[in-house]
Every structure is written in structure tokens, then in C-alpha cells.
Image (cartoon, rainbow, N blue to C red; front, side, top):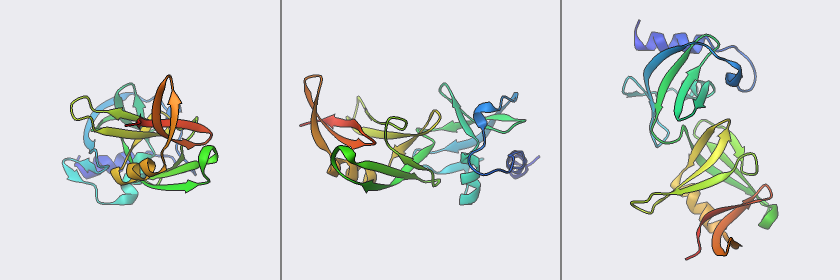
Length: 186
């Protein structure tokens, strides 16, 4: 079976419905890993070649699940492992509503998921110990995050306010009634 046939077989197993498929309810047998990779920039690759059809990428993204540190594409009858370099999604735009503690930050990902940061969808920033470069993330859906694109992170920095937490002054942003620290105040 060719790689394209394998991918089409997997897509054909997805039940037609509105909204996201209930991948959390599906527990098929593990069928092995496939040569599919999501690069840090959000590009999906199959057999080393970028998947150029955005509707196909979007459809694959709806059947993704993370168990522990491993990522899978899951249908009711098949579970296959894929490689994710960093996060499976990239937050590519930011919409801001309101201001101050009433502010709401709405992120849109490269696969058109829309997420409002808040208690259910927290923001977090990981600092690389070698380079000290920040890697910001927003929780998108069950155990899956989006890396926040650099340009979008700069927008967050522009919105940042100072708040004291545990005796330290932090820069951070409000969304959905929560304060999310993004870095220590210089």
C-alpha cells in the first residue's frame, strides 16, 4: 500500500460529524508509527514531504491525541504514532478584547482552532536554559498545546503589565480573569 493510500485509509475511518471527533473515547489497538511529523513551525510532513493540502492537515489535526509524551492519530479502529517536534499547533494570530483584568486573549492556530486563554486554556512560558530564549504556549484542547508564534508573543509583551507574585515582580497578561506571567520584570 502506498503512503498516500495509507493516509487516505486513515482519513476514511473518521466518522462524519460536526465539531471535533471524540478521540478521548476511542481506544483502538496501536498499529505502529507512521512517517508523519509536525515541525516546530507547524508544517506537517508525510514521508518527508510537506502536506500541502491545508484541508487534509486540518482534518488530521482533529484526530490527534497526546498520551504522556507521545502523539497519535486515532480513529475508532486504528491508532498510529506520529512525531511532533515541539507542539502540534502554532498560534498565529491574537485578538484582544477589553483591557486590564477584564481582558480576553483569543488565539487562532495554523489549523484554525480558536482558543481563549483563561483557567481552562492557560498560557505558559518555558525558558531555554542554554539560550534563555522564551518558548510561549497556550493550551488548545485536551493535552494539546500551540506554540505561540514569535510575532504573536511580541504582541503579548506589548500588552504586559507588572504584578508581584511570591515576592518577585513579573510581567504578564490577563485573560479570562487570570494573570499569566510571561517573564520576570527586568
